[in-house]
Image: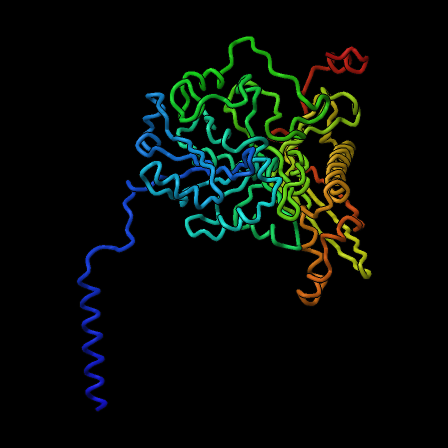
Length: 465
């Protein structure tokens, strides 16, 4: 009896194997030509409270071959759809374009400011769980509407918006003026008690675009605002001779202490990334500048390098005498002390200076003067980090810097940490900072500018230049 059953089971298995092997092709195969490749996806809220989902979709035969650059034709198209959910908008876009939209190559998710000031956790959670989206997709907030950002020519140098976004995000480690945040990390911080999320601010600089806040029409052909850079885009990228650069909205202060869309400049691409949006409880509650974002990276040990303008201690009130300083390699140590509900954080930061350019003739490479330079730079950085910490506690009431990650290590179990409610106690935490700066190099040369003795005599007499 057992043998009969065994033979029947073997026959059934053989039959099923023959059926599977005999079925040709891949059941879930999709031809590349049947897909619409989304480069950027944006979310806005319209006047009726409906979610508006915008897509920036590549036109492959122009993007890859560079035909758009030579013919001034569009290299992508933009599409906005009002629907209750983002997934429904994807389906509606597919029946509009005749192609199934794919988010597998989407490089950026942008929340319009009005959308970001609602609870973005449902949207971010949907995007994170949707298997068509990669967790490595970057996240940003756009002051204004995300749909407007998606329409414009992001860069006159690139025909492929995806390449521009990747190149832009690489500036995170080179400048420190924003923090590149990926979707999976953004989502985890949205639902975490340890720390609140931040993400970059990306905006249209209307001084570059001209007087029109919309920046032209959609689609990216010649003379429009999206695509590879038609005649209108080229005019903005290279302003007419004699056009004056606009004044800084932060007179006397560092230009890096601004936010996206505020940089005083002419020419180049209309889009810039600078500063960060701060979230609490899934809702955007404010913004911080590029320099304050640097302070966050310094306090977490993630700052790699960046150029700072430091007031010369000999002429502290003269912005024209400011130093140009290349700060690198932040290293931080956090000591946590807990006494019941009271928390004290002692933070020590150490940084290196690899370039120091001064506008006076003082030789700061002289061992007698080097401590003066190091102390001036350390004081500047300390003021910056103290200001950022104060804003996080008093203005925002949210630990977006990430001190909770260090405080959590003082608890034996996770339930104890969860019950501590750190985000509620953070505004009352006592935080002290200490900054040390090491002048490790003066630059490629070993000393300051060499001038004739007669010029040194003129400066000592106060005649100057």
